[in-house]
Length: 92
Image (cartoon, rainbow, N blue to C red):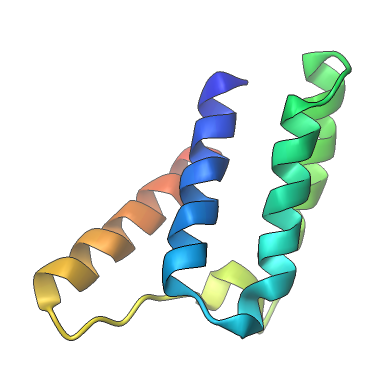
């Protein structure tokens, strides 16, 4: 659960720093996920709830499936988007 929590925190921070208001619903989902992880209950129950919330992040034509960070500086843009892809792959 510690790694899962860390990955969701990193995703939250990345989205908070680079997203706009159109991603507010995804931010709320990430906040719920972090509350679930920190909440009471056994890990299996938490994992099931987190998996359900995670799927909501990648709805067709919205959500994080289309999220990409654009920065004028190529190295910075590449670093942020590589980090995003790594987090998404680890969570999947």
